[in-house]
Length: 155
Image 1 (tube, one colour):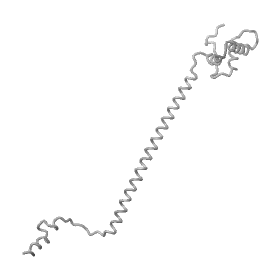
Image 2 (tube, rainbow, N blue to C red; image 1 turned 45 degrees about the vertical axis):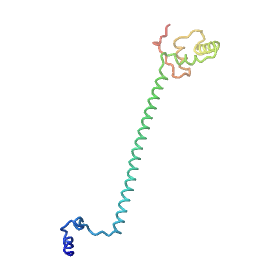
Image 3 (cartoon, helix red, strand yellow; image 1 turned 135 degrees about the vertical axis):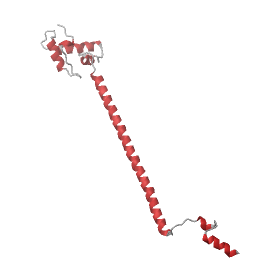
Image 4 (cartoon, rainbow, N blue to C red; image 1 turned 120 degrees about the vertical axis):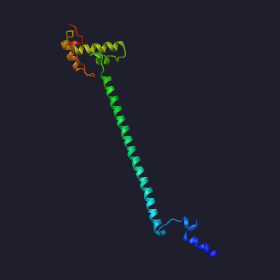
């Protein structure tokens, strides 16, 4: 009676240990552990390296984008500053700006007298349009003064 039950299990008919096993190939455990270790470490190292490369590329693009934005903003500020600097409401504003930095009334009178003597080339105590325009060209003011008859010169 004890031997008959054992035969049934060997044939795989009953539901014992033999019924749950899947067919597998025999594995040489020493060789496979090395291969498993190699491929596992390769995948981990390659993943780390590739993630670092992707992060480096994204970071480089971000830095370049920020630098381009800074350069563009700086150029816009420079253009705005240039427009503001050269925005003059009248032809004589650069001259008047240089005269505006005086210390006292006597200092202002002295500056105006010196300017008048500099502009009155023929010393007749009168300024013609030509004398005035040519004298303004010789002055070292920024921006340069360009005076035309349309700027309000009356005879």
